[in-house]
Amino acid sequence: MNFNQLNYWPGLLVILVVFVVLVLLLEKRFFSFIKTYWFYNRSWLSYVSSFLFILGMTGLIFSLLDPRGPEERIKAEVPNDRTIILIDTSASMLAEDVKPSRLQKAVLIAKHFARKAAGHQLSIVVFAEIQKKIVPFTNDIDLIDARLDSIKNLRNQYGSSALTHAIQESIQYFRETGGDAQGNILVLTDGEETSESINLKVPPGIHVGFVGVGTEQGGRIPLDDGRGFRFGYKKERGRDITTKLDEKFFKQLVSDIPSAKYWIANTYSLPSEEILSFFQAEKVKSNNQQDMVIKPVLMEWIVVPSVFLLILSYLFKTIRVFSLGLLLIIAPGYSQEESEAPKLTPEVVEQLEQLQQGKLNKLEKLKLADDLHRAGAKPEALELYQENLNPKVDKDIPAEAYLNYGTALLEKGDISSGLGVYQKLNESMDNGQHSQKIREIMDRNVVSAFQQQEQKKKEEEQKKEQDKKDQKKKESGSQGQSQPQSGDQNKDQKKSDGQNKEDEEKESGDKKDKEKDEPKDDSEDQDEKKKDEAGQGEEPKHMPPKKIPAKLKQLMSDDRQLQMKMIENGTKDLNKRKSRKSKDW
Image 1 (cartoon, rainbow, N blue to C red):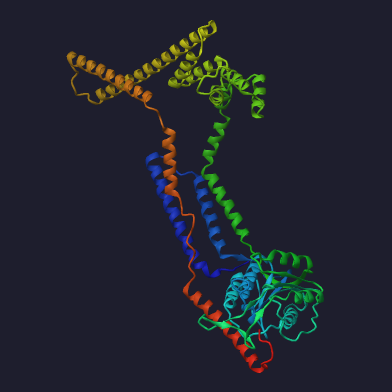
Image 2 (image 1 turned 45 degrees about the horizontal axis):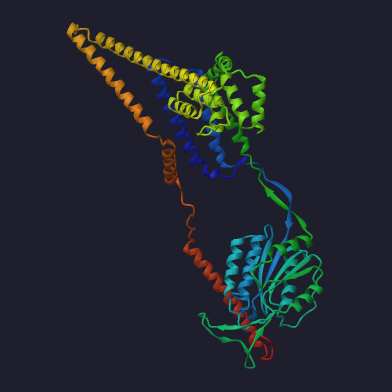
């Protein structure tokens, strides 16, 4: 075993030593405090836990050195899926019948295709009289975008088109790089072939896609100076030249090539998906086996035992907590909670299943709520009442349902809501015998509810008095030297205590009356608090774009200018050697 990042070991060793010293000092200080104030000695489980913790952290720290095994030589299959993008940069591509121009439209199609062609090795080649490879085979999208931007504003005003020569050279490029002529060629041109054509011999392993950029109506070729000012249009014998898309030329090329297809791009739609599906359907994918040397990663041999040691350290430290948890689980309190649970009859259980399936109507739900209330499941019954009973009394619903709803609210302690339900029910009933019975039941329930409330108040007051007595006893015990109080003073204290109690009861009654009169808007306050918290914790949705470093911008600009100069100079040299009768667009 060797370490791939062995140069970091001095720093990691210093970190480990500092970490171990801090852990030991903190533990010594903590357990000395425990022994001084709680009289407990450190157990052997604590020593084992600390040792395992330090050992596990040591393993994790040294795993950062990237442990590797000995070198191994393997054979891997690498998919060979390559595409050459040929872009026509002749003078006819400057025509503006396709906005903003044919050349800029071709660059846009090339960029879109590069984004979609995931897994392809792409090469960019520009051609006019000659061709120039500006990007070798790569899958670096950023490099492809930068080089395409360098030709987007190219003004090759005197360059003719040698399309068939460019295709022939691309086939040779496949042979030079891969040994076999296999791959895809995507040609972006307007179909204006100005050189003498040759007989194309495209192998079956190469698939060619043509994209015609332009319109059949055509457009004039603009002439601009180096600063971007237009001074006219290209002329021949005193007349403006109009370049048109030649669709017959594409049909002839497709018929001569075994695997080829063409598209016309004169609208906003981009045929990238169709081109990729054509290449995918036509290609014969070849897998080349290459020898590769690897060093297997052995980090898991250190990380896994270290994590296991940390888990053991935690278990040794908290073993008493886990044992206490087991005792609480096995304790008889669990059985008591089960015994206190409401006992439901099979009929009620069946109705609950039907409720889950949505088979009960409103009256059946209220009947189920009555059964649950009688069985002791009062919270569940109260929820059913609140869901199915309207604030106004519905005469189609039995009065017993509202009676049980009000009773459940009183038992819960919500006396104001329960009395409100009783009052609405009382106003909706007539003076019949059945209504009189319900009113008697309501009266008894209200009386019992108030009695229970008063009993709770008395119990609370007794607790307060008992607490005061206990405090007085403690104060009298602490002040042993103080003299006993006289009888008159005791009487005055009792009177003052009684007055204080009456004042407290009056204040509590006034507070309750105010709470009844003033409506509570807790839900609205909570919503406003949530909105405020959400507003404070929100992050901006749109982050500002990252700035490109100035040096990188300068390099990209120099690269574009260099590419444009090389293409223009090569075209001018060829034009000097050509006759004036030859076509230069």
